[in-house]
Image (cartoon, rainbow, N blue to C red; front, side, top):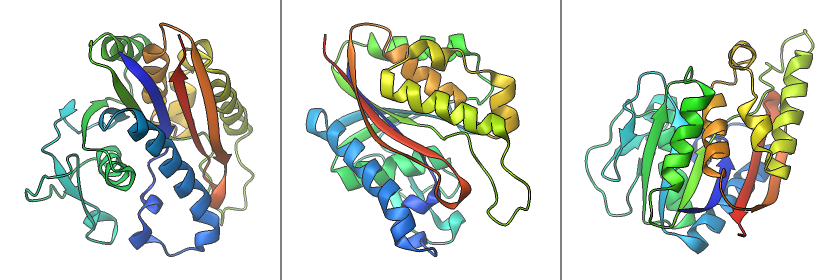
Length: 236
């Protein structure tokens, strides 16, 4: 049974060694992600994580290691605290960030599930329900992006649909609104660059049973990209 769910973004800028911009802009989202994952670790040191990736395997075990070398700096990460195997240079970004946050929050291990970005809502929700029904109490880390993705240098205004979508995600995270997440339009999300739509819907499926309390931690648009961070805790 899943007792806590943390939703965090997964941009490479979460890696301190990759920072080239002002930390005053980036630190709030980093701190929120650390707070969310620390809340998970307070309950369970072994997590399940979900994200999206078109080319990655559907499952990655705790023995998986990777590196952010492809993003500019060779920062190795692992899905297990004691793993020391050769890092996979092509590990999908959600898995890399899951390994990074695992280490920062002091969790022991994380098992990664990756969905195709085009996975239907029903398939994503079913995965969440299966993870919740697995038996052992655990925590779920959901790696998911927001709606606004705009180059700050672009003279064009942001797509108004992105702002609407971000408000839907913000409220759904705040209110544990499963219906709003399951109702996300796949075509519109794809057009707006929200490739992790299915990960949001896994969260909705995982929270299908019981009652939940939310703790919103962050929702803002630094550097033209919106990030949402929050935690759901089962209360009954």
